[in-house]
Image 1 (tube, rainbow over the protein chains, first blue to last red):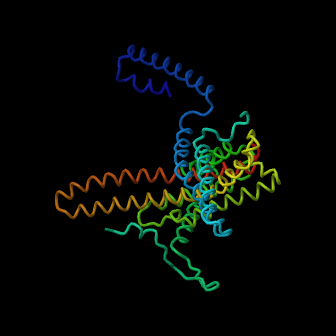
Image 2: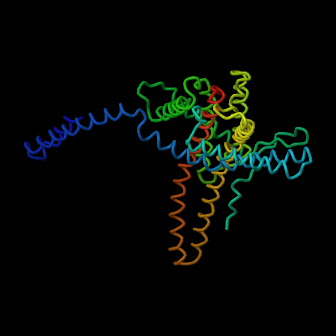
Length: 119
Length: 249
């Protein structure tokens, strides 16, 4: 590739200036390759993969809390109807559902994927 | 103003018959599901039939989609998750094609109906439960009992964990459905502003340039959302399947 480019552009520019430029280009290319190689070794998963997963995580957050509260409310409502203890099932399960929703959000945000075994 | 909900209406194309007094019909939704499946089959079978060592344009799309899903599964559910590759790949491609085909004007968006997304989410949910019990037996209940919790609040935590588990199919299905529904309604509303303003003479025309620019930008955003929602649906499927494969914390 590099030699192709040099041959192609030699016709237009003075040869010594061109040679200096191509030498600089080559040095730059070597340094860049060295740098990229080191980078690639340092982190297994660079840029482009992390970007969509971060956005995906953002989209996850939108419904996690609501889903927890809805499930809690539904179970509370069903228990109220079933046992006839009207507001109490709704009270308890709405709060539990809220807690479950908060846990969902915390997990979706990746703050702790699972409870820490050391705690 | 054009009715923004009209695009989601389901109407019969061919009535196939009646089962138990309920009409069984081939609807526009079924038509677009068929279009989606034919499109996926055309892409994957057609593109990979040449089996070129150096892939052509279509073949590299097919190979990229394979590698993308395989990488997603391996990074979330590990090597063992690969036995679910056909399942996850099918879901990903179906949702992706349904979302992207739905963006084309005058088409129907299959995933904008909660019955479709809920059916997919319940399929994942039941697969996780059935496979979790098949693979781990009663140890699958360990999913609800986190380690290192003091015994006196453990019953409360187990309750909350069970609720959190039950809320999964809801958030899984509502997210996709709501994003597609809201996106398409927004597009429709802003597009109708263009024609409304365009009717008000020369100043209206100038004003209509603003919603027009917005609709163009929204179309790009919707294309991104269509892809990202398919990705989110697939990656959550992998995360839930991971719980079935490795239920221990």
